[in-house]
Length: 405
Image (cartoon, rainbow, N blue to C red; front, side, top):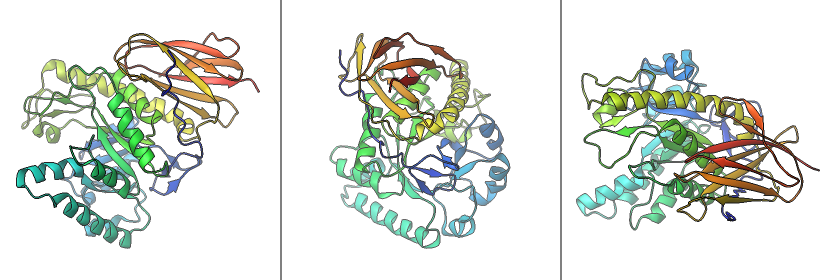
């Protein structure tokens, strides 16, 4: 079956991203930065996080920037300070490790809950007014770093316009999307929210998506479950194919996350801390496994960064799929033009079932290799204008192509 929605053509004129200090770019070059961030890092964790291939962190709000800036510098990590004080902006505006200033967390959803609790419909407008004032105050001190909110996964009933407003007001568009609940069969919602944000911003702003790297523990509302390494990779590629130009994983496991009934990830996740909810041995093992998956993903994304930040190729092709599908467009794909004249193709299977895929090019296909997550590559059979492959449930694939002139 022809997957008419699979081919993503955004960013053909350049990919909006930043350098390490948040300065805007649209073409890949020296200093170009694709964030691979970890949320809720705490003091003492930064060297471990850097060794895992992350290049930036969100530091837990309970720690002031001055307390950790030395450790961040030693680890070589960029930082996204959350709720910075005016004094912190003044002191650290010129620090080379600042990536951007993060001012408000999930404002649409939190305002909706506040309005439901108090019956005051003007609370979201007031929250927005406060954000604008704070953003202006930071810009007066530091006009160089991006300032932004990080909104939630979806727009609550009646607040779609506000979600759009929050996701376009910042210098960077940022939101979270945690699609994996018990029984989840598709990543379509993730693809939809990222595409919506990219379109709202006219493909002109960096788009940082916070992805699910946690599981719920007793006491957490909802049924969020710990992803597998395969699912984390698929979420990453689904987001990238639909417009993400940076990834933030939620979250580093610590007593902070456990107080919120959340099990994060880490290389040596403990079952319990002195405070917070305990994890079962099985859940702690899943956390450690996902950490290993994140390490592998970081290494793969680092190798792919020149392609991820390269313009999308203006090459016509079609994607076909076979297999059980619950959504009209179960595959997402993006073709990138490489500096050497070749192409890198990114594909994500949004479905929780295996699919056979076929890629038809209007011109000739000279060669195809499938690049594995570990960096190895193997040739794929092809004919004059097409090739095929099989994607596992929530699978992703990277192909290196040479096309006939």
